[in-house]
Image (cartoon, rainbow, N blue to C red; front, side, top):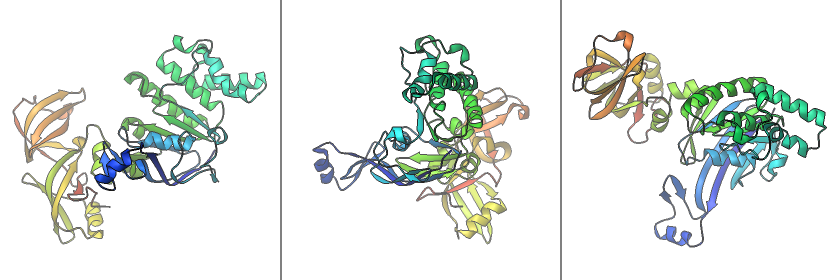
Length: 390
């Protein structure tokens, strides 16, 4: 229904009177928690630029306090934009009130009217537009059918489960047929089973309604399963934009590598060795040649031999006869696999071992060796943390 463009968007919360003088004594800018403090105030979002295509599903993901919800609220018009430009369907909307932006928002806490039934909650915005009763009834029942909540339309929020309330909140948003649907951590208050069910419902929903989605979450599983593209944020800055597969296979830096993937990526102090056009990584006496594709990218960037941070995902790590020596700390049985927690090279490392490949059990204190292939090793700069391939 609409494109959305954010051009160098910035959000600064002004400092309380008296705080500016204190910060000046300590320098022009400082870091407090994970937010940057300048003479202007607390910088929550910095240099945020993103082009969202019509009907695209974009997910903003990152840890608490990274600026993702603030960015969403600026798109909604609930937060004033300090700097930059926001366009919805080609129209500059920085100063346009929320009600005139043709957007709908689903909140984390549902924000339903407790004295109204589900039907009345969904119909509320349509009644404000003074639409005919027959039109309102049709739209409400169509939304209820899509979300499978027709049988709950006469119930009030207190008589519904968390998942049912969230469906009502989504129904209230979609009846407006907005150009842009904004969702701020809508599943975070649900238990694990309900979250899985609602994720599936949202995937079905986006196929049934023609609108552009911007979805905020701190849960990387939601981001990976829902998004056409993911925007990973930290401390108010974009760290990487890409498809779920791109950010998983080619993390731009150490933060993205450690944030995307569960269990988290293993990191090692290692050496990158260049021999002509070939590249090797060496850790704990184990030497592995990188794939030709990785070697080509490193050569194009003229990367030389150096100390690096090596990243290998647990699912790409294999117990083997030759490799890095490790001591078993804990073996977690996960059904189809065992998560082997080991200590190697002074670091805690996780190895995922398929139970079908196991011969016997792993004992605490047992010495094992592990290896990895050259196409799954990620090499990061010791100085900048950036992926040296890109």
